Length: 283
Image (cartoon, rainbow, N blue to C red; front, side, top):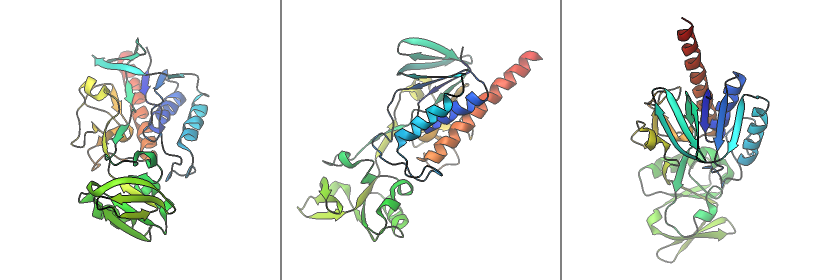
């Protein structure tokens, strides 16, 4: 019986494991090796690590966790998760493992607009977060590929950063390719537009099926509804990172710093729940 099982080895899951390790809780972290930022060469807007390769961040996190012998990391896939009467069962490569708590840190999956060539630039020249990628296009011409009202807000956010922001309806794009400026956008009338980078709004869904398997309450955005400590609607189940959304957020927060903070808070809640159980048992 583990004190906690963490599913997902990104920043949120790794921070949860580190916090639990420091509190000497027997913890299993299961990492499938699939990450939302798997195509991103540089992570940004994270203090002391601005510009670092996300894979290096994960490597460093694992190296730090290795100092705590109560934490076990398995590179494996989770098949299923269930929770009944305060006991969580996680099936890892066909083997059931048990705990009183599970922290879901499985993230989101992004579906890009069906524009030829756009996926080759995703995470580099094509991004969705101006806080993470905006500065890299400073003083250059950028495009906002968004047919919704959010486009005006995103363009206004980028105006102090870029030399020019152009808003293009993605329905008019027939291709995205390379150019000396960065990207060449081909429109349905045959004209082209060269920009340094482009921002899009992908359709994001839960990367893993575990929220559905557990019947977790969702927000309108599709994110798992959590309290500020990552507690979900099911006892013993926590959700962290961009897959989760507390009520005081307008939507899921795709931020490394927020994911790390959420992982730590969920681990704190797990430790507190364990301590309360020990007090109750002792009395």
